[in-house]
Image (cartoon, rainbow, N blue to C red):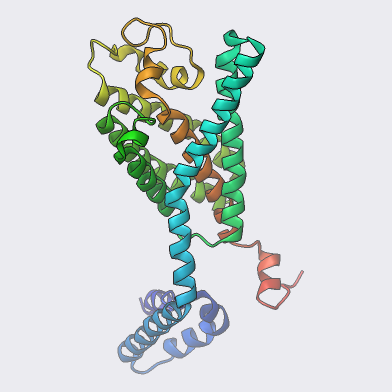
Length: 301
């Protein structure tokens, strides 16, 4: 019983102190004649040490950096939208110049793919250059706040979707799903299961985007305009311009209603996964040999 209590008390200390003094503290507590009092004193010291160390790391400079990072994340969806509009405009101008209007869907898909690739690179760069605490939660929340702000502005928000309530509902559902997805991918990466993590991120991301697209259509359009049995096809249709009468029985009516919300959420999802990939790798536990070097000692072969 005492051994379990000693281990529990030692767990209160920061890892660096446990590695350096843990065995010595455990021996003293095990040999103590007043175990209850000594365990209580040790636990109090451990909590005090942990809190003082944590408070010492929160400096004004770090708080300012964290605030600027959050602001960048909130503004990021606006930058994503501008980039996507520029690429779509370029694709449209090229189609007009060449007369290849039948290739417009391919130009749209290419523009979205280029935007997603740019966002992936930006996410990895940002995560590598600035610390993002609890990225799996902070990034989706900040991006959702930025998307909600865009949707709230009438002329700009109409670009996301013609029904504001539907856009906000889809963004809120995306934020919750993205937090769950990012957290799961982070755990898998920290455990070294990279293949499973990236497979899960791809499948989970597509399922999430398909679900939030359905949330928008469910909220924005009545059943007679958007038959519910077409729900699994709404996201791929909105992303590819392939629409065999999914809404109102008329060609491309779905794109006219949902507009840029699916590609915007796609870019936000790609950005989140890029950030989580970098931050999870940075915070992953080191292998035994590397941990020994980091602590200043080489483990015996």
